[in-house]
Length: 369
Image (tube, rainbow, N blue to C red; front, top):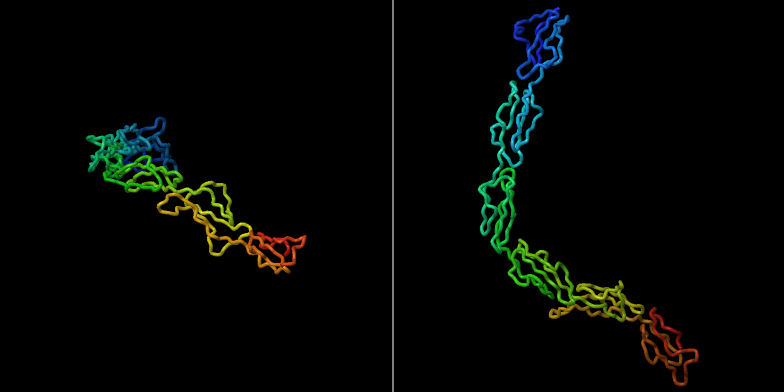
């Protein structure tokens, strides 16, 4: 019917008068005071009761953590906090481009309801003076360069700027890129055969110089008509080519195109393939193509290459002998006729003819007379 030592509460402690007592009788009320940093909750009992089985009855929490109020917003910083109650810690993080100049970047809510430390301060991040460059300059010039400030470099003409023309002060106090350099960049004079320059007609050609070409008549442009001198002293894109033009497809008596076309002109380098017409057959080893090309170094015009005899007339075979007659002229090849004559004292029958033609299928027309 008694209780021993008092229970320990995180938020409260027994009144001082009870600290020396070790035995408590049934029904005894032990009163508590809030610990430092805590305040009473109105309407809640602040004592425990010794029960008959030797344990203490525990009340609802009758003390709550003291509030310290808002610790304050620091300029150019973000505040990170869960709450503003006793024991809480508020941390300040400087915004990008700013740095902490206070010794401590936090404040703690104390038992007396005040915040520890002063409100932290963040200062803008500064960069060193931009690097000067030979044969060039930068702007604007200032005593100090802060976060997000930028400068732009220029080169004395006709030098080219190699690197980033504009750099900026970044959040860690460093320039975004090394200073550029000024260098002479020059491209060779571009020459395109069978063309003329319509802009950029004369050099010297420095960085970013532009040349524009136009092909002469009977030529067509292959590539870009405009080129620019790049940082590597190269023309970009590569200079174009002016290709010659061949006119309509040549007429070959013994051949025709494998793939017929209605085109009336063809660019230099075009190749056309032919096949033998009916009545002709390929000659082994002979080329059956024509190419549009320049045939002479001193002549800029493009022409079709001369065709070889890549087809030959079909052979209709040696004609059988004729009774009482002979072949007076002709040959047994496609497109030719055989002329027959009768021996003296004989004549061609009324229903016969003295001519036979070698046909496209390799046979002779009509019976022997």
